[in-house]
Length: 292
Image 1 (cartoon, one colour):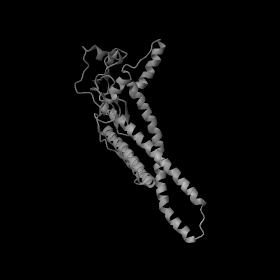
Image 2: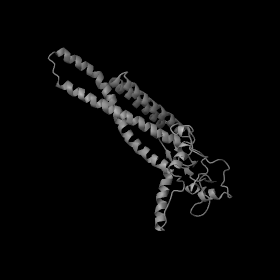
Image 3: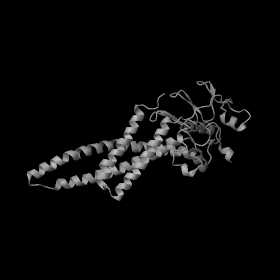
Image 4: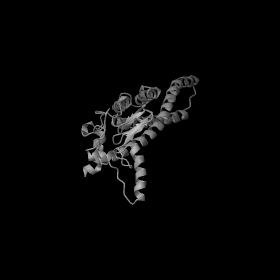
């Protein structure tokens, strides 16, 4: 299946439209080539560039598939404990007719099992799993930072423009030619104002949605969960409460351990999409019991 489609192209074009509009119609008219202007363009450019790189990696990186011939090692008690289901059997995919490693799930869209599957994302036209979750998380982080920055600049420029228009309305001219000249100048201004209005209309709901989505995935990273595991955990907590027991997520390694598991052991690479995949091979995972 080709990863490039109209949705992916639309996301990239939206990035370019928001960035170009903010730089050309907002930052330059407000700050020109001053130090604040250069700083705003620099920060916005870095966040936008990193967001695009991480987005492309999320689209084109394989989320992780079960190696051919993989089977659970029956002599490894730790792994068997992780892969056993309620019925006591080893996890097995009925659609692929293959054994499933822990945290692996079958994607109906991709039509295969995905290692440490989080969800299938139509916006990247790919599954989000072990192989590309770090890139996806960093994409959310950088694109949210860029959108918040762009929205603040758009709002500041809009307020500044409203103040100028209010002052112009108070001014009265007696010379008719002066009025004609002002009207001619306003035509070009109206076009740019329309472009900025469209940009704000696109940026505002995107910012709200992505802030919420980023907050959700920050919670998942801190707890070392996937979206699927969160919903499974809700059901498990209800069942455990009925029997008077307490449920604990088996892969919770503590805050530092959870961050290392997703972002990597090297702190200097946490904010870089290198490596793209999370820690490990995606086939076995340490549990909180191992840490204790």
